[in-house]
Image (cartoon, rainbow over all chains, first blue to last red):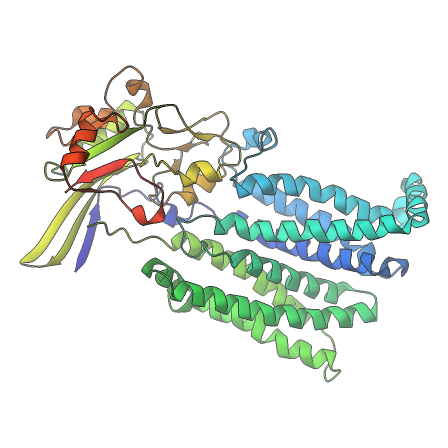
Length: 314
Length: 178
């Protein structure tokens, strides 16, 4: 028998009782989605697809800016001392992933704006005619366009990876303390982004390509989730307890039904059938994938805060 | 640079929680929060049982994860080896709350991360922290761990002791004498 009684009796001090609420998972999801969209858009630009006016890379940066701004607002809402937010940009803390993240977020915007300069929409050119001049000059030097594609891919990768690293450096939370977490978040971000572009792409080739790519991302995601859980189950008792939170504990139903089932296992065969022209492309599988990606962040953030080290010190 | 730490004799501690109350009074800890607490751990089955009472607080780790994750440098270690929070730099992001394996931090209603300071304001004047000063059984000791002649160093040299969760590698500076 092991019995612990405490005078603490204080939910306000206990991080296990969720210091981070809904704002952080929303931000992590939107950050991952934008990261995926930047990688996809960057790849299309690098492949020279921006010449096609229907290319997704011509309108994805607008969605990215919108989603990232919502994500950053969500992050801002989470701060308890909002007036001091500028302090993030008066320093660079070498050991703090959040400090890296703050700077990465600031640098992502210029990369997205450069993406817009390649082929600005007519509506924007009518308002700011100079954009046409910038765009023409970029087309005169096509190597610059390729570099903008590479820049978007690199910043997208950094943004997606950092959202995982942010959590995984916290040794106090066994569920997060895995070097696989950044991989899970980046694959999940890519999969959500591919699903989103699959849903809104005007070009048929891109729609097919992203549905196929999404199947690859979803399959990889299953493997990364399995490896993450195996890693935890074969580590210390705290790690085993953390894995059990998802496998059989209080987060199991959400994890199995919404993340694994509706988020991966059901849309995967549906999209396979669609790319093989057995069924029509519908927005249902991509919506399932996007919802799965969102719930994954909620489950990881909430269960992670629940996971703890065993306080047995005899 | 000194390295201040605390030694608590679990054989003398009776779990009266005077340390908890003294801390709250000395530091104006807002109602509903606490910087220190007492854990009582019972292990075994009657009649084979043992109990340890632990007066706990921030461990002022030598390798503090809360300081490493802070994005603004608000969490820092001072020249006495005490882990502190600069309220003016803190943005209340709660990364330190999540990073502390001891659950020693909370967000003060004014928006900054708060925790035990080893009563830094008293230590600077050469006094003991409030919890140590008030302990009715004199079970708590405070001093420089790097000074071989300090009472804490002598106790650690002569008695068996343990820290909480040493396996995480935070190198806590609160020691419990067995």
